[in-house]
Length: 321
Image (cartoon, rainbow, N blue to C red; front, top):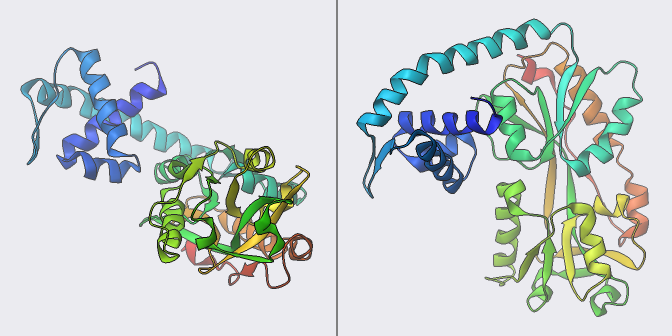
């Protein structure tokens, strides 16, 4: 195998072979069933034959697939063990591997970089990849929005941030300090892609349903920092956590709280339990302190009066045990 994508195809094949179910294999790998199916189909084309017989009731290996499984299982396990050994040897020599999404990296990394007592290796990646790499030990901590994880992973909440509407300052809705979510019923709404974090996407859609908007007109913006640009240049509304107000540099854009229902997203840090690196606690505590110091006063000048950030309890050392 000469490329990481080839290894991902092999991982998808092995997961389906063990689970005998594409959806269960996808859940295990934190991928969509379509992605797993495409990976297996690509591998089948490369190998020149079907690896699985698929039906509505079951998935089973073909004779070709069974022979391939016998051939690759032990080499794959040797590769995995070599990876684990190399990672274990490097633990004492390198800092904590910290993954982060683009927006949260911009908010949290400056304070971590200024701390002489925190040693970490930054890794930029979106939430699904963070989950996979924390599971396999490549990454120690992942900074992201509201993930859905299961043991041996845990998500430690740092603080809750309100979701706001992002508007042109001449938008009629901008005259009010708060905007009921139902008011967006007939507006095109911009948001970051749901595949970056399916849990956040489902939370957002549940809020619309609660507001009586069953099928909102949602458009995806590839990057969080493009959202304000698109709002400023068109007759559209953005939805995003209020942290966007801290990083926005686009003139003519304002931020208003969303209510009825009020939506909050949680900034979390993911890790394994027990933690795999001896310095995880130090980085966790530094992230917690940065979350507690988020500039609520500045946000308050950009939004209507009222509490902005809802801090969560101080991170404990339980994850290290």
